[in-house]
Length: 236
Image (cartoon, rainbow, N blue to C red):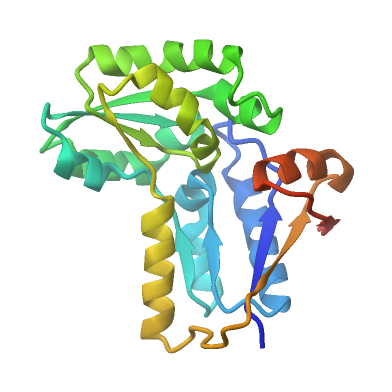
């Protein structure tokens, strides 16, 4: 049987710092929905959702659930200046999970943080490679570079789409840390350990859902995915 990759857009704003109950409720609904589609593992591919819900989700469901968090550990290990910068949403930066992670590694390096409220909207409006994006990135990143950061952490999965713009601003003065590849490698390793890997050589397919309006998100998601896709609605 083919492996299926299921993608669900939770449809909540990452900006509000009091959104935890909503994030937890929607995350639980989406995970339950994905399990009913036959998923054997779920990646919570959002830093905001991870820091607010991952423990709760793991207590509720028996399948492997993977979270993402800002890559402070690899940044700290590779920093030569002893200063690293984190780009993230306000919700992530103010979460208890992030504060605990920061406290652990602050003993080794200085951690500069920057909330980036405009980055998400730039990506969702397909303006991540625009001149405006460069101007906004300058405003967010220059203070981190001025503080001596030689590692810039992308603390939100939206920000991966801004990598080229961010690199332009960094100009070789720092290294971008994106946790997407390490997370994918950990998923593969864990599925292998649990004997859950699909040994079928048949290529899988991707299926997309949204808890929002599919007509509104289909265009941007197709553009970001790199080809035309169909997005179905799942309504709580």
